[in-house]
Length: 621
Image (cartoon, rainbow, N blue to C red; front, top):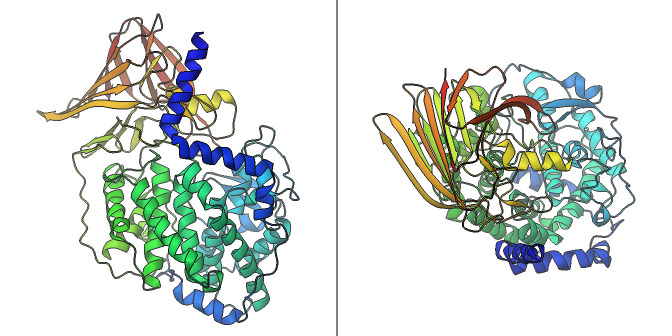
């Protein structure tokens, strides 16, 4: 009987969280797939789409394109030109794998080969036998072309034929609407934008013949149309950075290639939808609805592309786009570690860097923040020339907004739920947020700490989305974060894939600074799957002068005979000293993932008690 009533609670909570619009849409979408409606809507072997004046069409695109070549060349620290020539490919800005140039459908880790004859709607992107489909999508996104083109520009190499051959190969092995590379509209959008960058850069190359442009033009149109016709899925069922990417591409596709949309209907809709997504997804305080630093950078890059594109075409967005861009910069800048430009590895992180246009580390947010700052103000945010390069690949705008960013000792972003404290050599971040939008990780009250550029208290990261159940639960669950658990329970109840029930919510937050000591007190509703009255209070006192952090966790509610477990994840070899009033402690090795698809070991200190509170003092040096 208890199980029956719990299922009723889950159903009621799911409806409350997601809403009937989402549920009805998802149900209808599944029915349409089973009835073959999507196969008819997204045809195989579509008719040839061509321009009567391909040269004129191409010139219109070049004139409206937002890019330009940087004013000066720089010596590159790395030159991976030969690696590409030998069929090595970068994955998730982290590691390289040898992959046959023709193997667009084969998973490089598992060896699983997707069926290119299968309509995209019938592809299972979470097939346990196939492995994580992102390994197939990664190369087919064509973000790697930026590195080769940068090598061409800075070092005088010639990658034109290589990239052209790769586009030819992709089109030959991936017929329109067939196979895994048409499953995700965001991947389609990015691939097309990146192809357009290639076309723009080599616009004057005599090897860029009309026949090739026509072949790409046909593919661009049908992929753009696919995104247009499937946009409701991202705007209703997904509602995250996918929707921002796709609405922007709908607008840009019609802007750059007017023949795609002779009446201007989709151009107008794409622009309006993009503005609506920015207004909804970026909160008023500049934080982002996915509660993820890396996905927020994804949006920053898209905002820069969007703003530069409108100005290149002498158009503008509504004010909310510029306002939320400014707020995003303020938040991310305050959360940035000054020594190297990194941010806490907080939230879901799939290794995405859509437009890698500098030689800075993947973890360094400076190039993307600088590019958007430059879009808005006309000035650079950083003096480092490497950080400036991404913005230098774009035409200037005429906005010249009055925008100044200054590191603050204390910041509280209450909409997204982040408290950030810093001094000249350390940064402390506490997450204490409400969730009106779907959370991806059960990590409220996570504490992240950096000292002299080292992440002493770290977040577990994401690893992979399609992995073992055990790893899915660990990385997205409470166990990989510096927060409180009850037994082995997550703060929220785990559903399938990206679904959580009983979202954590903040009851109260107090912040202060007294005699040089930062003081934070946050109360959140958590573990409501056990009892709807359950709450956790975390008090944090950080004294930078004595290099001490005191954390006092108190549980209020019903937990049965389960123990409280306070968790601390830190790098192997880190100089940390823990003192706790808990009677039981445990040291163990666990994993964390800074880069998607790659795991490293970290140390974990756990403090346990049968009581209802744990107080711990951490000393660092």
